[in-house]
Image 1 (cartoon, protein in one colour):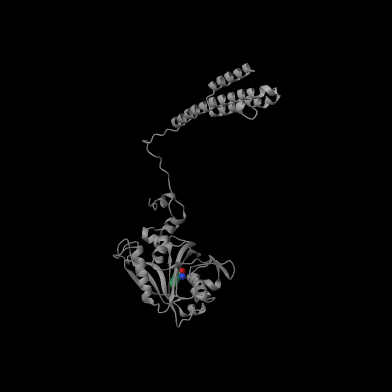
Image 2 (cartoon, rainbow, N blue to C red):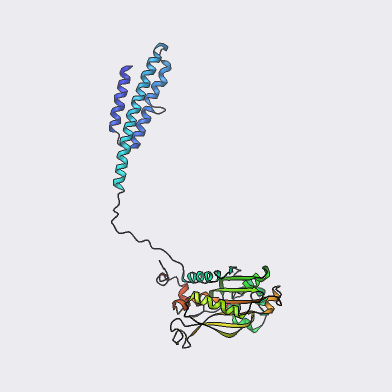
Length: 341
Ligand code: PHE
């Protein structure tokens, strides 16, 4: 029996010498010490040994087990060290090499400007309300004092699904939906896509507007002027001046169109401003009393102001872009110019 133990000890030692990887070590370990291993089998065979020899045999097998385990532990440390060294060698990087540039995307110019506009007004206490893009005739027109068959509907060439359901041609229905659901004081912005049957270098069938609405006691045209002057100062610069021109919208009375001094020629007159020195940026006015009343607001107590601007238009003016279609062509060369990284 003793020879058998000796042979096993020598064989385990020898085989261990040839092992060079953790995987092989694991397999060899289970061959000797695993559940079905040779040493384990010896221990299991103890029950067949005559009772008087069992204890001394048991001790010998145990000593053998401890000894072989120690060989394995030693070898395991050596193999781990070797493998770590190999891994370091293989994964070595040269930190003096120049890095590879990771191309990064950026916000679309319309989103950049939209965020700037929202930030400018939110800084003045406005909240954001988004209405549906598919709306009905009442919210898009009637509640804004544009009755059916009224010629004012020609101001927006509208896409209709049915006589009553349409793609909103402006964000003004946002005013009505807010006033129906919220008691004054109201101070909201309604941004979103709008649709009109219009398509040329300065008109797109889909474009983006932001509507603003303030309703409170004592709100007047003066407040509108102060608010928009401040907006222009934030969006453009201190030198840019504003001009209010009388205009007409059925939902505001009085109505104005707001111009800014041309950012290219600073008011002298150039091709961008068609020689006038001024560029129109938005429509606005004092909310028509009829509109307040239709939405359930007492026009003897409250008054309001509203404005609506096109994000494309402001972006074109700000960055000197002459064709609205460039925004929607997904031309990376064009879009990359706005990556401010
Ligand atoms: N809804 C108008 C348009 O789309 C803009 C506007 C909004 C004008 C609010 C006045 C007040 O042309």
